[in-house]
Length: 95
Image (tube, rainbow, N blue to C red):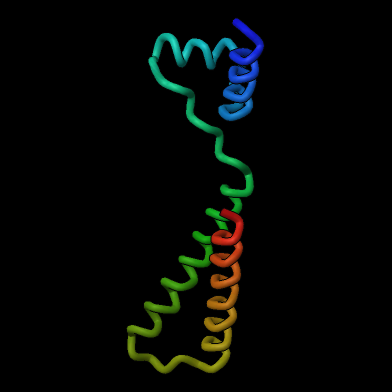
């Protein structure tokens, strides 16, 4: 293995969070590159989006039931909307 191949192996190890031997086994015996590990930030973002989605579903259910929405609930919904817009902007600007 030359130096370039070794550097590529090291990058694959970091990318997948696996040892060099596990990466080589995956490439040789399974004929595929190992899967990338999910960054912690993406997991946190996913969990936050899931919470926001649950809140939006609860608000939509209440709204669709034709029961008048109290002003404090409407204020909370608008704050949630702003939070979601900021999160989307952050995700779009980050990529």
